[in-house]
Image (cartoon, rainbow, N blue to C red; front, side, top):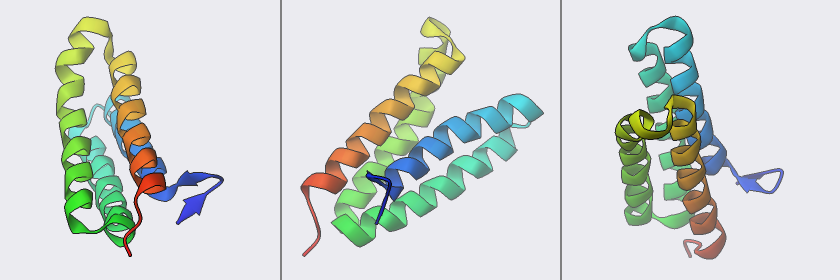
Length: 105
C-alpha cells in the first residue's frame, strides 16, 4: 500500500496532523480539526494493521495520538506551525520506517 514511494498510512498521518491543525486554525473550530485528525488516524490504523498486524498498529496509533497532545505544550516553546511540523515529521517518519522494515506474514 504505497503512494509515490511513501506508505499510505504515513501520508494519512501527515494529512491528519497538518490538515487537522489547518482546519481548526482557519475555521476557529477545534471540533472540525479533530474530525480531520480522527478520520486520518482511523485510515492510518487500518493500513498499519493490514501491513503490520494489530499490536504494531496500536502502538503507531498511540504515537499519533501522543503527537497531537504533545504538539500543544511544544507550541508554547517553538510556535504552533513549527510544533505541528515537528510532530508530523516524527510520526510520518516512524510510520514509514515501520512500514518498510516489518511486514506481516
